[in-house]
Image 1 (cartoon, rainbow, N blue to C red):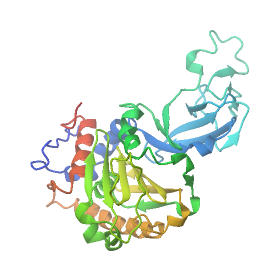
Image 2 (image 1 turned 135 degrees about the horizontal axis):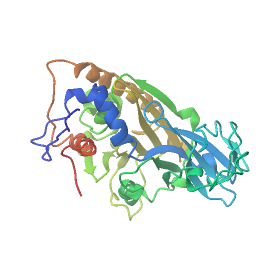
Image 3 (image 1 turned 30 degrees about the vertical axis):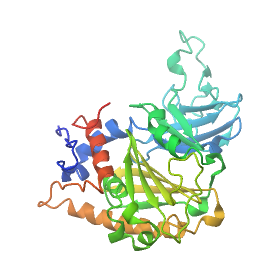
Length: 369
């Protein structure tokens, strides 16, 4: 059994995660159960189940958890998140988005209401106590932020705890007016551990060295990181010629030239807010050294989409630059001469915070309270 990871609470004294964390299959399997199964995952948006009768199947973290779920909107206009597995013999119920009066298993005909209640099963007239509570579809914890739907198989903490600080900071944005743009969305395959990708995202330290174009748009000298219990924020201020938010007077950032809010939600979701809208990034582990990163663009002001730090054309370039450096790190951490590094107290607070949360989830010395 792999011993718990320990991260010192004082960043000035702390060492990073050990190298084996990024390549050990046992640790990867442990993380699947202790981190991902207990975290909140972005699964869809409310436009997928907009009208009564709509059903929308999703798979939570395909390649890691592989849990089939079903989003439904019942005929009373209520949203549900259910197990997409029939309670009779375990068949997947729904294979594609559709409009349905009810759910019928194509294997043996078991029928469910859109809220998951089991109503009928052929040849079960003599079954004692049918239907029992175990015959209904399992209800999965879920919630929304704007149009985004988050679900958790076994939540370690309430969704409100994850989103409260985000809501307090950017709640003034009209998120219901952000529209998904499939033409500006895509997936990337990264040959590196998922946590290395998050490490890289969580610090602006590398921007002057890796991202020349982004460094021209963001004022690196004023780049800051703010830590919260289950999330953190990197605030990017725009240089003089670049686009920035028109902030309301009630915003805690009023008077600043904010070009980007880079918001990370534990463990693997990034919500990047720009004056044009939001780029949602979901980091999906496929193996110890393979990761799928899904970029989803939600557009608010199309006329601004190619301006500033969040210019969509530039985001692809930044992503490919990040991929190259993260893949180089993946190769490097396999070296017999490397184990653990140290943190920059002024630039790597987010990485230290992330590592402590992982240590906590794995049973080591992390955060509390």
